[in-house]
Amino acid sequence: MLNFQQNGGNMERFFPILKESPLFAEIKEQDFSPMLECLGAKAQRYQRSETIFSEGDPAAYLGILCSGAAQVERIDYKGNRTIVSELTAGELFAESFACAGVERLPVSVTATEDCEVLLLDCRRITQACCNACAFHQQMIYNLLKITAQKSIRLHQRAEIISHRTTRDKLMAYLTLQATQKNTSRFTVPFDRQELADYLEVDRSGLSAEISKLRKEGVLNCRKSEFELL
Amino acid sequence: MLNFQQNGGNMERFFPILKESPLFAEIKEQDFSPMLECLGAKAQRYQRSETIFSEGDPAAYLGILCSGAAQVERIDYKGNRTIVSELTAGELFAESFACAGVERLPVSVTATEDCEVLLLDCRRITQACCNACAFHQQMIYNLLKITAQKSIRLHQRAEIISHRTTRDKLMAYLTLQATQKNTSRFTVPFDRQELADYLEVDRSGLSAEISKLRKEGVLNCRKSEFELL
DNA sequence: GAATGTATGTTGAATTTTCAACAAAACGGA
DNA sequence: TCCGTTTTGTTGAAAATTCAACATACATTC
Image 1 (cartoon, each protein chain N blue to C red):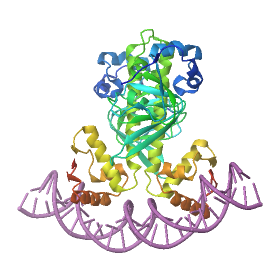
Image 2 (tube, rainbow over the protein chains, first blue to last red):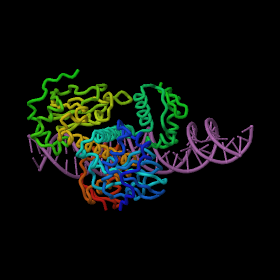
Image 3 (cartoon, rainbow over the protein chains, first blue to last red):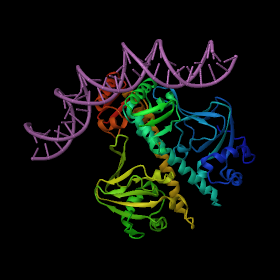
Image 4 (tube, rainbow over the protein chains, first blue to last red):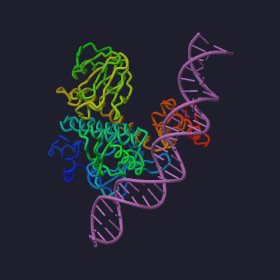
């Protein structure tokens, strides 16, 4: 099923991306080569609309999208293919499944643009190698940190969308942003439609609610800039 | 702020709990003592309604609730104190914050019954000790697995409650259960009120929807036993 | 077995969201 | 500046949820 063309060497072209990846945080670029070797990293190319992982594949590998774009998909209960998340260059995918010891992937990953992917066998990360290399140790720690941060973000979103009304969801989101950024004026990384999707509410209803809150003197906003009053 | 009465020795009474904890999976009981020593574990007692962690405390420690009961709390945007999760003996808490490198806890943890807690400094877990003990390595791996599993569970719930209608939420939940248990007949671990809370819907509306689905021949159920048709 | 309390089901009114359609504003390029 | 496009705001009707109140079923205790 998996057809590895390139093992080991000649991965320097990925280094700029890896340097930015939290998975390689605190790891020196000079260690990248021996490290990828030690981890048995496999580089793979995929063309637009090719399948990277299929639902049901063993969840042994985590992927790093080095170039191009891809998406994680799932079949929902009605049989619709739904997008779980969109991936851009530098992003990690399938790492939770690989680290959680899940047998088989419950999702598929498909290239939406031609792309290059680095695949790492999760067992080779978590089972520190015989030479007990320091960077190996660091990578496990990075993985733990990434996963823990993801878990916190998911928890925050769950807490926000668990509110029942548009107003409560919006206010929960905005006050969380204000708390995290430690200021009552901040910019949200969404346009209206994206914010509505994030909050799981209707866009027009969201606009209406924002207007109402403005009239009530609860907040001000201009486009994506919000101020809580 | 933290007042450690007991360091190191005499923690044998916790071993039965620790043996069951996924944090100690694959670690032999004979290693527990040197391990807790190496990790600088602190045992603490709290009386009912005492505070274990306060919002704003440094997020350095993860906790293991060894006996009694506790809850994780948060102040929501309206100023209400809300329960994030209930903890029973054996459960881990604050581990995501400690592993994610968060500066300060965004939640409080309060004893709801008299309880005993084991506190572990997360840095001493993630920075493998000088003697590079094998169990230390195993514990990092366990933490990673626990965190990844938690992240998957949170993602699943987010996917379920991101549906807009009671019917869609319920069906998404039930089909996920059926997929995971690999059978169309299964028991859900909730009564109606708990299921409604999990799905973030109104209990009476949930009952009504279940009746409707039964009449439509989509499912059968008796109490918490469901069958998808 | 009667009584009590809890869990679940049912119903209609009030509230809220969603949906569709359109208006207004902002943006970018020719 | 003009024009076409995209984003955002507004509105009313349809649909769904929530809420409250009550009915029924189930379980436990006395």
